Image (cartoon, rainbow over all chains, first blue to last red; front, side, top):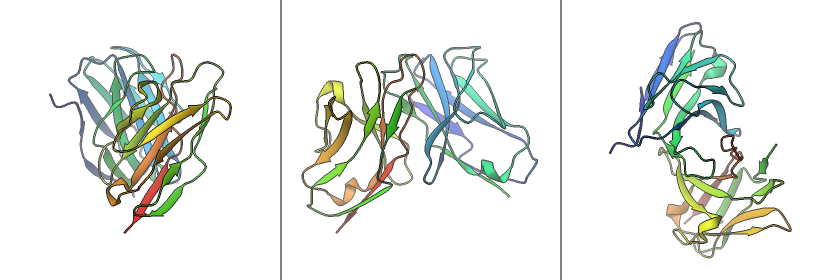
Length: 113
Length: 108
């Protein structure tokens, strides 16, 4: 039982490049989330999904897109990376009710130069 | 909208001293609150939730509805408690809204 995994762990992009971050969970969770973590800003929700085939915007969705084609996977895409997107990205999942514990991935450290 | 406020970005205490990490919330319903912790270079993990009324790693958190607070406390801080702590309430049918976090540094 691997829990929540994220690929890649680190990445350096140049401004304007694109990339996709992959999150996978093996706990059969309905809800999945993408957050970014920045110093002094805490955790901010980018997008989330309440089930396969559904996505919704969070607090800071601009510049990102997501897809949930399979229940176990939640992809975060950056179409044209900007230096402001330099951050640590965390994926999380839970059973579905807001009161349930969220399980987090190990994070992806992204630097955009 | 629900709001969670953690007024301290950084809290430094000496080993063996008491610790209190503050969290205030605004919520119209009956709140259920969580504390998450992130140790250095590790993923976030649940520390405790108020509904379970348990003590984890010596930490407790009491919900004070009158003051709308859910402060995290530990009587004697240890060096291994140094971490980033996030307070979070449930948001009904919307995802958790985390506070901005407090970095606790325990000095030997």
